[in-house]
Length: 330
Image (tube, rainbow, N blue to C red; front, side):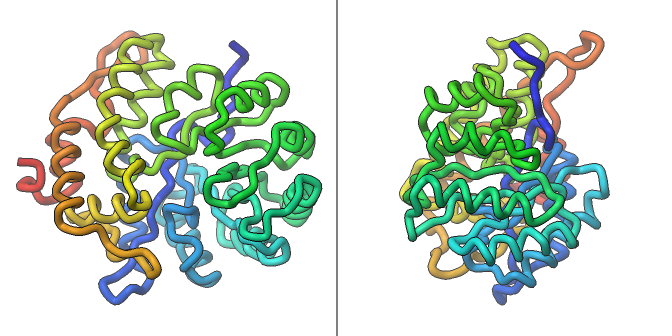
């Protein structure tokens, strides 16, 4: 396998945007959550993405969130800012604003709703890439946008010096492998159930939603694989599957389930914004049950120098101290 290309780190979290009970941006909560995620095993954060409710946050809120998280986590943690809209001009404006606010890269989704042809998709990404000094992570998620980035288009875009990465939610594993083989693009699994499969064929890592609540477990999957213990990596991926199922494959958006679980654990999240609705008590109880079952498993992975170390953030004691409410895990 070629040397792994991971420009923004290996385990990235698609971070929620915390709001206050009144529905305004919770800057302090965002700083606390970001700090917890980095301490728990994430080596990069994606802000203002789908999980971050970007369709319902203002341009000013997006800038404020980037600046607050940058201040909280320091200069060395890669911050990828979601800037994609259905409007090329607005996307360029958000990219320039993200660069000024302290982002290291821009996450640019395929323009949605208008369903542009592939030539227009390519032109959109090139215009955004030419507009600033930020490297771009393209976001291929046709289930939400209605338009995919076709493999030939992706291969051509890979020739642009600032288009260097992809968040892959295409659910086209064959096309992904083809693009990996023919380009130097750093691919990040954007669907939690694909974290290990995509990593095994050469991806850079993942942009994970469930990492909002279990950053150490997600990091542990990739750490085990890198340490050469593919059996353990598969076991760890299997262990998070029930939580992935509850958070990401139900009828509710991942933002809703993630915030429900974070709120149940007394971690910064707050309400979702309309048109989303909060998860009900039954859904939240199921999420909490699956979370409790997972964090009790105490997996261990090989560490540097051949030592055996616990996966960051997985031990019940560590999670309890972060949550601050031990009863939540009993």
